[in-house]
Image 1 (tube, rainbow, N blue to C red):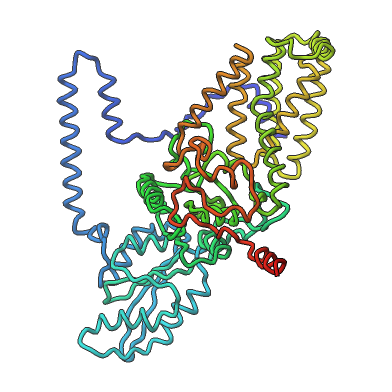
Image 2 (cartoon, rainbow, N blue to C red):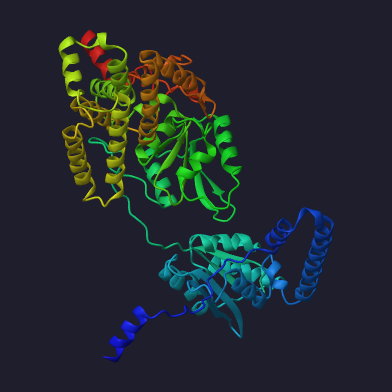
Length: 589
């Protein structure tokens, strides 16, 4: 009862709120000084300058005093090389890895027994990123239980270091280094560091053991006939998938680190006796000259190394299929695989590479050519169909049969909007449903897309907001966009589709023709790592009829694309089906 009275009293009786200090993000000293200078009047500039100088001098003097007083106590903070004193190394590691604040860093101290004396040692690693069994069986057990060292020679310390490296640490990947940064980099990437008292080197052992996704079926580039493997997020698994397909000792997987802080490992893949040396050097130069703190995915890497960032059409192929990467490497191209990303980047690329699917090489050439013709029709429908509808209904009525014209006008009789506004509303609604279907959980996504499109379309027609024929145009346009094999290219056409709608609304067919002319100029002027984007048609080359727009039979694809300027231009002999030659000889006999 007392609680009820107190509740009613609190509801109807005014009570002074209790003062509470809210959190305010503090500014740096330099920002405070700038704010102080902005707050003063313009008439007191000289006084401000004098006060600022005093503030800067005071802060500088205080910093000098702090640095002088802390030199002796913080000698370990500026260590670059491994010290012979284990205590100094341990102290530096604790400061570098924020121990004991970091709860997932394990610093294990132990002793190595050498007959009549003990040598202190320590081991450091991240819990959850390493394989504990490898550390216990291949590092700790030999050092702690099997260390019966009989060191002979004058240079005892050197003999101990060599013996530990070559005989005692029974691990397959051990790196010996004097530099702290190199050891710390290995620890950050799932390794462990071993430090021993009296030795000025440290051992970095590769004991990665974090959880990861296995090799699975491709999610985006699905094929009916062909390999059913895709990349995952582990770098060495991805390079092994490519090597498993190519089986060529001339395949080079060059290691490159990107990111000042993240040091993300990447592999530059090329076949050294096929790929053009200048192309490999250019890709390597662009990768090594990326200056950023962190980089996490090949989607970010693509934006750093592409030629033209403002161009809507992609200039680098991003694929999740190892077989497609292997086939492009065999043509003389270069691939980049990044740790943590299930997509590989292949360069240089041309417009025809985005129109091809991985399945084209696995089916007979009549089927592949039929599929490519259907894709080209789908591309034109996705890009130009809404614009053509606006141009015909607004400017070019004579192109429509009379009966169809009467049907279109009758369906649009009660629609209050012009055709351009009508189609923009429906295109925006379609893109919204498409994006929502991708973002919701996978069991609900397809259902949301189908039901949302049906309900929205039917309701819009019933409310006389859009005409029924426009629903057909938007649906056919969406189906055409789904037939584009490359996701990035489909995104580009989704953006350009709205541009063609506005051009058609302004000038009809003349606006669409102007847009096609400008887009053709941009594409013909574009290059991907020195290769013209419209090759082999602009400029024309000899390989334009082998496997570019149309695909010739596989036994006629004798040479690699000549616009790549490969070292070895011949892919197979002129007569690759030798059994036909032997049959002809038997027939003559």
